[in-house]
Image (cartoon, rainbow, N blue to C red; front, side):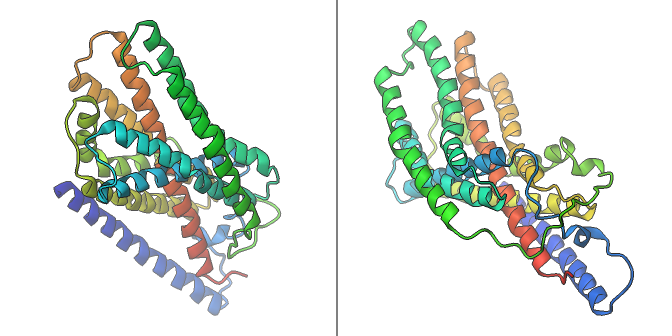
Length: 360
């Protein structure tokens, strides 16, 4: 509870400072416009003609990752909601895992829709390629890692090895449920109107001056990923203990509150980093907004290494490989979810602040 109150306090402080600074900037810009001041514009308003320029580097991959993160976040949210409504018994870990997989499959339409809307904004036309990539990107990585691990478990005769029937059923769910839902969501996403932005994009991209060290990866990723991970760090210990030390975890209402705090923290950290980046006239916020918050997944994996070294007593190489494989999957999903929150928050943030100033 103490950590939760600290995070809430920090969230409120960051939000207050950011809102007051933005109000002062917007009032100053509009006053200059009203007085027809001849001085050159400076700060984030100067890049209004480039801030909504679609990303030039692999927009397809970015849209696919954001769509996947939206699908993972929706599945996690609905799983917690079902547990709070006592539709699931969190003490039965197998039931909870089955629910996560089923809800991830059923949320395929959300991933396809989000990916399609963003891909259409980038003026891209290869909608089939985008939809198929959204449907297979994350599942193919997870299934590939799991299949390799399962081969080793089967060879040594481990009780945790999964049967061929289970693998076939998972493949059936992906091929016959998740993929069609992704195409359905993509259909509605491409049929929807293109996302409107408050400023026009210049034909020629503006020159970007030298950017301070804190606004460029990997320094920005190191700084931005620390606070989202810190907001769930204490709760993460109890979750890891339930997963690997056979302890019980059943406070799903509190976990839902932690999830909301995580979303709020990712949102505000992403907006602050985006604001600092725009103030130094760097309009390339698309990938940075995603990677800055997605770095929380790296912190989670580093935390799992500490947990392995200090709390677990695994004998042999194979148990360690199993632990690291599953934790890398969880860290990847966590990073994609946090990156999606950061990306969508920055998109809303830039639309809001540039709509509030008068632009010629």
